Image (cartoon, rainbow, N blue to C red; front, side):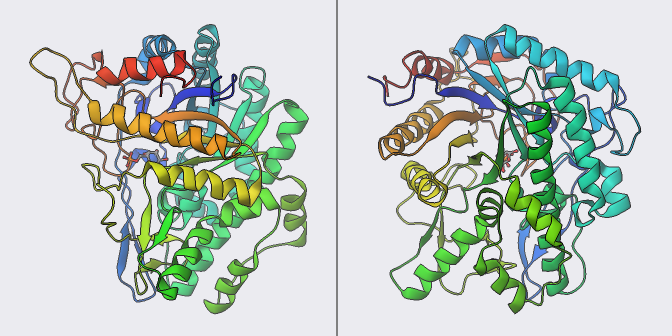
Length: 469
Ligand code: BGP
């Protein structure tokens, strides 16, 4: 008897901007993710806390022209679902056109039809940091409430067009990252005093909460059987205190729950007290109406999707960006790091699932988990990526334990089942895939695809519904 439910959604996840390429063809407009992003998040001492850089992924792996063969490889592994995003600028190039771009709609029609033909359920992130650049320039992104109606127009178009093909939707990617990478997550530049910067961040987040509520309302009207979820980055939320020192323990709790602000508001339907304390202490000024609070309360999200890569450790006195959850992180002596310095902590994932279960008692979907590593082609012409297979098996084992703990985990999509562009570094060499793509950091290569050893490891796990773990 498998630990995993028989209808468990095994799969993989990518994002339009990190895989499709074709960034400026078929009438697509420029998205913020097509630009070298800038801006550095600072703390109240004006110290740089987190780099806020993204890189243009222009050609990426040209998934736009290779998706049929790529999806056939996913189907060969037995995928039940596949997560990707719909590039907003393929549908509304500047975000404000009267009517949508038919070439963009046609691409996603073909993409979802191919998935369904292979028995793969599409799981769609409505916007994966892919806000039209024009809306950043005109409104400074989500800081302006105008984005709400423009986003809902985008939702209406894609719900009406794809509602009979797509049944799992997430409104935004990792929306709690508005705190740490505002330019990517909210298409927003921060400015002025620290208090003003926090006001911008919480205003953008509030506007996104209102948009999420209105999207849930619209979905029920257009796609009654749709599952509407929110998506967070919970990697940095697995925060351990560096010692039993009360200041370390309470500081870790503070950080952890501040990462849960977005899910508290959208799954519980109201703002928690600890956020209001931040607003008071930092003189945060917001434009929030009673009507908006009623919408948030009435149209809550159904499931919590999240990414988990690593855990972090908090020590009293550490720099915290904006008192809003940005964790610089202190090395954990009990964990080994990946080649990019991310602590590998499978038990942290079980811990996170239990935290989410206790906090929300709602279905949870792990939509990003993976290991970015340097892959080398061996003399035998193969890629023996044992580290990745070990990471996969250890994390899935912990999900199995979490399910036995009573956590309602409905699915798992490995981040980057095929090599794609790293968002944080702009590199192709930070590879996540079970499928290798011959393309390097300089955009050179044949774009040829090749199975790694981990391809068959995941294939067997799915075939046995996790029993071989
Ligand atoms: C998450 C993003 C993904 C992906 C992932 C891995 O925060 O939602 O888009 O990028 O991080 O990070 P990276 O690509 O920087 O290795």
